[in-house]
Amino acid sequence: MTRRYNCGVPLDKRRAGVLLHPTSLPSSYGSGVLGADAYRFVDFLNDSGFSVWQTLPLGPTHGNGSPYQSQSVHAGNPGLIDLQWLVDKGWLEEHDLHNCFADVLGRSKCILIAFNTFRRLSEEQEDNEECRKFKQFIKDQAFWLDDYALYSALKKENLNKSWIDWPEPLKKRKKKALNKVQERLKYEIFFYQFEQYLFFSQWLALKEYANSKGIYLFGDLPIFVAHDSADVWAQRQYFKLDEEGKTEVVAGVPPDYFSETGQRWGNPHYQWDAMAASGFSWWKERIETQQLLFDVIRIDHFRGFEACWEIPAHEETAINGHWVKVPGEQLLTALYKAYPKLSLVAEDLGIITKEVEALREQFNLPGMKIMQFAFSGEPGNPYLPHNHQVNSVVYTGTHDNDTTLSWLETITEDEKHFIREYFNFPYENLNLVLMSVTMASVSRLAVLPLQDLLQLGAGHRMNTPGTIEGNWQWRFGWEQITEETQAIARKMNTLYGRQ
Image 1 (cartoon, rainbow, N blue to C red):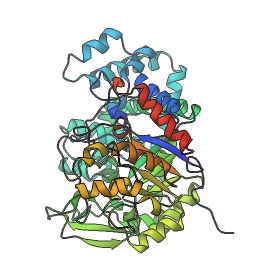
Image 2 (cartoon, rainbow, N blue to C red):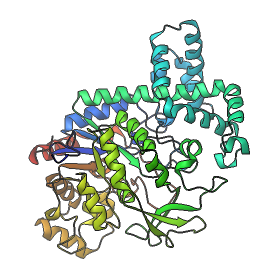
Image 3 (tube, rainbow, N blue to C red):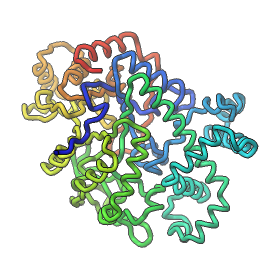
């Protein structure tokens, strides 16, 4: 009997969702958190007829804030922790919450105060239910949490330097040196375990609430890992590094729609032979965590499961790279064998070959259709609605695109004319037109960035690929979500049979 892949929720029927990273939620902390506004957003989705909330990766970020360059493929971003939740738990006083934000350390100081309170309670009341949950969390997540907490403690002690610049015995994970550090930094290690307990507790409570409302959480898994991460430091055997741990080749993509010189991401490449020899255990563990957090997962840069663009590390751009084959079929077979109910979406944008398409189709993975890419003038353009497939996810634009309203201001009059002619729509609100046809598509899942749903123009973009300044900072305000916004959303979901 032929095996059927990717048949679970939320890819089982026509649905619609909204793309919004939690950091873009309104917040008095300066960045969105997993508190009251996150629950209110779930209610907004439910009231508007949506059943999917798509986010970007949730991992702890480096200084530039990119969720695609995380310090761990398992850990959650401490910046998303809701501090009010700590007050409600009795681990943080209300006055401490207010006083902390007068301090430059702010959030970290609040979590530290809560940690010390929790630590004292755990010593006084070992049978406390919260303490039991914490101990169980440490046990269940030990396969990644031990290394992450140690990495985080060492990174702090080494003034936030990359592990490649740590003292030699620690950089190379000499057993004697690590044993000494684990004893000396046990308090700090315990803190980082506690911090992750807070994140996972809050996220899983939010997920439970969303699921109870019929809202599924759609995550995003970057195919590559940041060089300065707990994962590369702890498991160097799975990455292409020299004896000193430095990269000789780095990941990226060749010149494309977004950049004439390509994109040099700088991530280390995988040692696929070592991955395969282990039965892809590293990937199975990674998926285990993601399945805990999400109902469906997007594989960012899926074409990298067929072949990756390798760039010599000394090159400043991505132009002088070459493609290297990857055992993607073996990997996906192993993942679906381990997790038969796994729901994946393939980000198949960019230079996509017949081999990449065949791999995606072999495992029944929905690809992506982007309306902003559709109107080049050729009827065979795969992003035009009449070329969409049912097994796909359609967007007006993604987090890497400008808002649709802003994009419309940059295209030519010929392109605008083509849009009006294609849809037989002579009026000016083309943003609403493109949202409507996105929802009308035969694609099983339609996703609208919140910026498009709010009909926001220039200045509301989430990310500009190939740049490092001014990204990942956009947030909305509740005053922007009007009754008209919800009415338009409900009408589109009803009219086009999405649930």
